Image (cartoon, rainbow, N blue to C red; front, side):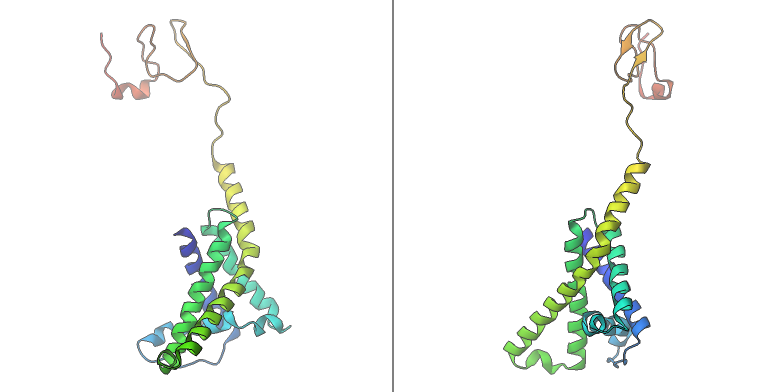
Length: 196
């Protein structure tokens, strides 16, 4: 589930930013789907490999994918999960792209079944393949996140030893001394009843 959430957040932010930066020719979608225009348009931009092959647009296109990887890496739990998150990112982008195609051309779905299925398959393969660029930044983000988390966790004490006033020594942190019955942790006094 975390992989899907990371892929979804990364894809949505990447789709919106790609439209804002590349400003493609806007397609008019029928109402109420016009509210999804940035996501639908962005799906075509992020799948378009020509942006990566063009020397002028390649750096920005690459940076968008690096940013998507950073966002999805925050949600991923391990380096290897970043590949699954990247696949989910590609799936989300392909779904928006398919929605865009269906809204522009409703006969796409009812046309030749073989052509439609091949087109959908190629769309998903292309989106998932390109989305693997995000792993470049997602894996280091996971490593940094784990390092920060490890640094903030308290280190376990090297040894635990409690000594009662009666001289009893415990290799633990007991609430009550088993030798004399004295309460050793006053903060836990309300949790226990001591027999007189």
